[in-house]
Image (cartoon, rainbow, N blue to C red; front, side):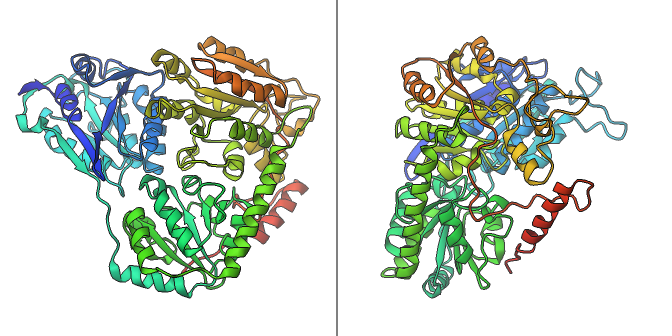
Length: 622
């Protein structure tokens, strides 16, 4: 079949499917893209003549990768999007999104245009030149943030490259961003492709089973433990293992702490669900973690937020069992690795442990801590701070007034920590956090991808003013395509999260408030209350992008707005100012952010003393 390389790429992508547990679906839901000279005549033309491979006009290249990642996460990595850009700034705009996808282990196909493979007209517009090599372009930036990278310099090379790209995209262990750099001249070149290349191809997603001997050893470790704890990570949800986890916990009586990605693995009201663990953890989970003598990690990569910078697990003889499809993660903390699919491993481990129950005193303590934590959440939800509302009470309003089947999306700032503690997850997709990369600006674009994956569910996007200002252009896309989002802007006049961190380091919130400089000083919390705020109207900005906007001043206004937003048919923005200094407490946890060893500031010297005390608690798990 004679066609251009670009036409062949689209023809191939249309025929890729995934299958797990008998459910089959197309791997690609379509293509996001912004055309430029590096792709308009190649992939652009191919998309034009393939209307059954849906093209979506997008506003920002970083945003389209976030949207693809949000879609893939919602689909448990069974489906994703291709993302197309031109060479130059369009391509490098995608690098941040690629990093987020790879760090979060989410499949996204990136197809940036590239410079001329034949070189004779170089340097072309937007080309990065090197005096040391002609085989370089800005697309080399994608190499460290891609799980697979290739540059297609001949039309026939896609016969080898595309199957390898699909292998990585569909791998439970190795997935992430896949980058195929497409030189603009090669995109338009024709080649006689074999017809078999365009046959339907189904990528079967296996449920790998752990070694039986390792399962028996793990079961013995569990029986020997006095205070076991499960850490449920994102792998529980991606594996569709939430029911298996609940059965395992019901039978074995082992309490559970949840990571950012794993929140929702177990309903919030399960008596052995202790909620969030680690730096942003609950008092319940962190107290049990401190004393645990066995930690069973399921689908977690043990980020520093999960381990509280290696201070969470303080039992002198603590051991780890890690259930994971990735060998790299399964062996962390010198654990006993159970290499396999979370659902299958939990089921088989549960069979071996039949009749086992964790120590009754351990279960009773966990249950009491669970109840005490729920009372603490009720307390925070009921705060009525004045004159500005507090973030915790606003989270409570969204959680309690939104429909049970709805989805909440967030990514960065102070909100993720408070949400991790306070959000009561009612189903595995109720809580959608991008926290592997914690990328400001993910929220609206990622939320668009979530809504596209679940069009019948309400999607609530929660973000601060800083994140909103970073990347809000996909409001326009949501309106164009008819995907209604409910976007909640918490305006706290700057970078609330880093302001709080700065103050904890003795640095007075330096340069974290959105105010004019005062008396020659840079804007920051240290300039006091008599400051001149910036004349920024975020509500007017959202209105200018086509959104319906509801402005609130009080908690009652906000609660009413949530219910009103349900009746609006297009993307709706709820705007409210909240108190940047009223936060949710930390609970028996710590995060290692090094403090200056020497300083002229007394506050910094005092913070350094506290840091040294906590730094001494960090562990090597050998």
